[in-house]
Image (tube, rainbow over the protein chains, first blue to last red):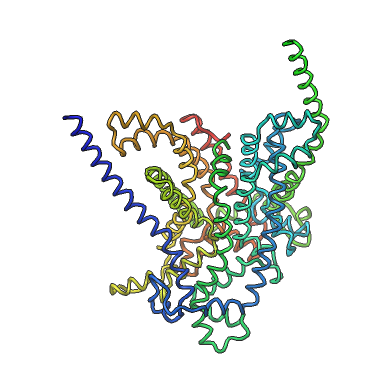
Length: 306
Length: 314
């Protein structure tokens, strides 16, 4: 009788918890997703409705005006292509360098392992700082050179360690011994056996490196003089600088050749800024969604022991 | 029979060690690109640090410029904006750390209590999304939503008859906006480690607790929280180590003429004055000063934590 009562009390208590938890997550999900949703619906709305604050739950006067307008901003398209190029080449280089480095660090026996580990980890705690780095890059000819956008940040110590832990825990040691017995050398073992077993971590690295490269505006801001090299995010920052004073229309007018009039340009700018956000963020979110199934597994395996 | 097996095994082992030694050069070749990368992008800039003790002139270059000792440092310590920069940098980071740190822990604990794998996965997938948004786009969204003329927040304020506020130009609002937007962007992502370690908790603990009649709150308090404490400590040390290297990139895009009194932090100052007005030696000295503080900070936090809880990074 008593036990039953206690059980009943407990189940009520737990029920209250679940109700609370459900409400909690509804609120959290709303706070996280609503801003994104708002940008999405605004990008398909009519600029006048946006300015009047009518766009809150769904697109108003559905239109593609904004998207059509940004197609005409020559510089944005150009920088978009730049960003795609920078990101693709950089990610391929990053993955190759990181994986081969991680493979070496995962081998238990080789001379100089301790020194190398220190060599890498030290860079996490101390660096030259912005100005010395800038001057040295200038001295070696990487200023205003597209290579800087591809190379800078293309290996991260953190990712190197995550990949090393992954190889240590997920590629069985027996495979290594068997391969060595069959007379394989490190090259053959690494390219023919380790890489095919590393699909998960490759996906994780691709997302990490790809996102940080795509989202980087600072390197472009600091290291490029010629506008033709600028990546998308750096160009976006300039548009943004004009958003501060609600004058984005000027910028768009100066960039688009066909804008009918100043007023029209300002009007369209009100919706175009939402479209720019969607277009700039889209590739990253799509990449994440594609890689998502590998993602959690890889991140967890890599980081738990690291 | 047994003996022969042993012999074969021994020979096998010998062969593998021999093969390993023979191919060592391949290992060095494989790691060479990473070594070169860090040499060029991390160690060569260390050589450039010397300009903090020099008076850098572009014509004479890094090596050729004249030594001035600690002049750049003393100039900075005596500058009228020294105190402001230090306070802004310190406050922004400490407040951000204090406000943002507990949130991923809370999210992870409550996410762990959701029944139904599908919903759990869906929530997990969506709370990571903001992390993939770039700094520039995040700041753009802030400018749009907080705009005094058409921003949704001001539209709502006006509906209730309140006056519109230009949030991004209010220096008193800057820290709050920085912190809240930072939490929005990274709290979900921050749950990954906690979720992973919660998933590793021994299920029999929960079953035992259930038999003893523990409610969910009690299970959270007595099982979940103690089991993630080591991870919490580890993340905390890492965060403390980054205490003064706040997100310069983000502050730089959020800075407006109006909010400069609170948004002027050391990283942004170094960018503006160093690259903007070409005072390379002076800003290199400021950067070095901050780097040293950070270095000392992470080493001491690590020491303290090792002594108190036995959790350390190195």
